[in-house]
Amino acid sequence: MLRHNALRAVLVGATMTGLAAFGTGAASAADTQAASDVPCHYDGYVCVTVDTIYTMEATVTVPEGEDYTWIRPADVTTISNDTTKTYCVHQDLEPPMPVAPGQTVEEPLTVTSITVSATEYCPV
Image 1 (tube, rainbow, N blue to C red):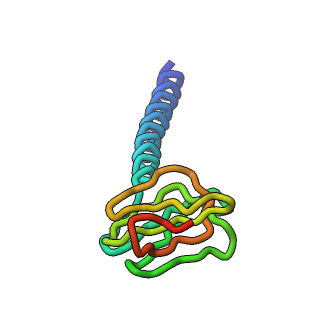
Image 2 (image 1 turned 120 degrees about the horizontal axis):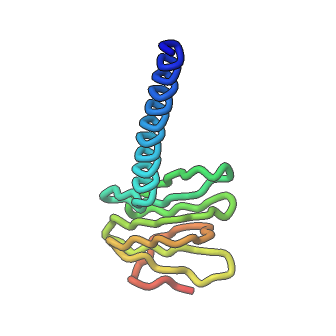
């Protein structure tokens, strides 16, 4: 009987430890997911979150006043413009989309380049 209760205590302890670890892991995963949903913001930069071929996210930071061109079209999830200039987001077969200073765009886009605009509009 003692042996049975000892084994039962070990199993219950292991189960509780496993559940506690799962709960902690689930909270951490949720925190990580929530953190990845927040776009990056760096003063003086346009911050672009790109999905890579391995479904991991990468961040591209473009200094204020500079352009950025991808070798191949990039799948972008967020664009945060923390500069004083309007930027034009160029996509295949779409007119350029302006991103104003302080604006964040959170939608999937396939982007070829990001360029500085002299006005608040993007030339077609």
